[in-house]
Image 1 (cartoon, helix red, strand yellow):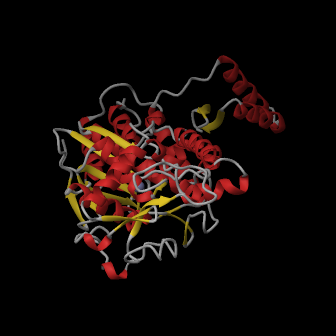
Image 2 (image 1 turned 45 degrees about the vertical axis):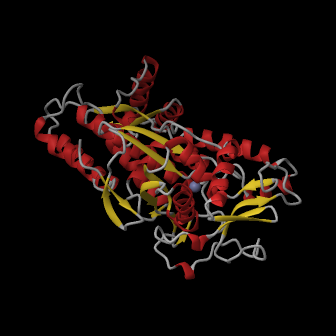
Length: 451
Ligand SMILES: [Zn+2]
């Protein structure tokens, strides 16, 4: 197994991944708040951590990937109200869309997808532990975390405590001991249609405590990797870390991994900016292969540009891989090409550098083209593509049927007779059946259209 190092936001350094138990790694990544369809930017952590899991499995580790679903939240109440439907119905509907949209990425599902609404008991127990230890206090049915009671507060986002703003606005300002404190539990308010019972009153949990409780329930305390978008470092992850540290006397996670945002030009893709491309629409437009290719072409920590030009580039890369895979034979790849395969995995072991890995993969493809006239085994290429979720590009494509091959001949005959309109008609008919006609030096060929 390779030594795997990942960038840890808390230390600001690359840290070696050292499993608590022999060869088992727990990953918790913060998932969506389900109040609308997700956009491509929301899909980035899903892709990054699903692929990281594949890589760790490739290295012989046993991985449990947890991506939660936040189904109790102010945003859901706000979105359900004008629609005049129960907030729980909206959350159910959007959670189902989220699962279908991400399933279409073709990367499988996380091992667990806990819902906040199904974790209330552990949430209440965790809040009770914080009150008991003097790290939280109840006031008028709300419960707040006492930020200054945690001497380590601020060490994840590496900010000075006095410069922080929880972003809770005026809500609860008159009840907090200190403006820095944040809500663990919110007393029931007029217009909120879901409510749970706790020793300090009826209401609902705050967002940050939901994740501390769900992560501990499924992975314990001190698990290996906590992930999410870098917009969550403060306050969400800072607060998750503070809650667990204060209640349990131990750190929630060893390594905090954060992915960069998607950019449209100079702007971050966000609902609040109004520049979103919905995941299911992009998948309909370009297919999952191109979108996964686009994601792996950028380092997870960097902002990722998303526009038509980048999508076209990704489509071209998909076609290049598929072209290279065509004509490979079953079995091991030539040993002289092995260093390129090794460079691919070495790049992933050093902070999951997928663009560097992709570079090695394309060098492998160049090398394969140098060997046009000899049989080249597909094993290395399949192994590399599998970790990127693109193994289907190297599968034996379905062979065209007799009918399609006959149409190909008819098209060629039409062209030879100068009947280009008829040739184009047949080409379009083939395209509708999922076959692209490619004219090569060896004559026209049918190539499966990639979606
Ligand atoms: Zn979270």
